[in-house]
Length: 141
View 1 (spheres, rainbow, N blue to C red):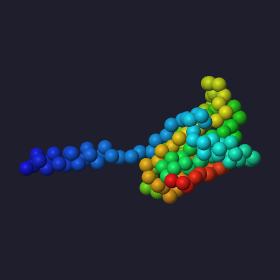
View 2: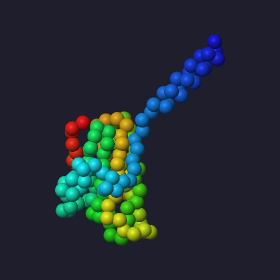
View 3: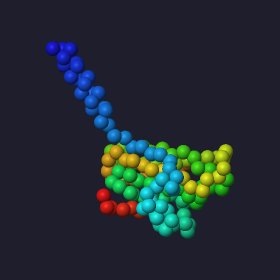
View 4: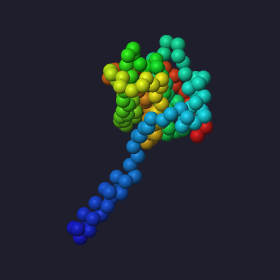
């Protein structure tokens, strides 16, 4: 009986772990983006006095983060991206590269898949909270 209970507890913990959704992201090219995202980048991105951080909501669980040249400080390159979540917020952490080792890029585009709806969205650049220059999306989902 004791081993049977242990087996049930073990199976329950394994099965509950298998269905866990997580936030994921990947860098993509503009060619891989949907038409809506391309239109947003071409016509909806503000460049006047811009901080270069733009986000587009394409579906209930999909966001596109677009970073343009205005994001970079002089002489720096695009660095890393990390996303962390808590109960009601998802936070984007961006860094710049001090030394540019490859050819200068003009943008970075990330496709982000969320695991659930969040009430808040925040962005940090080099450890300091900042803001999105442009926020847009479609609600046809």
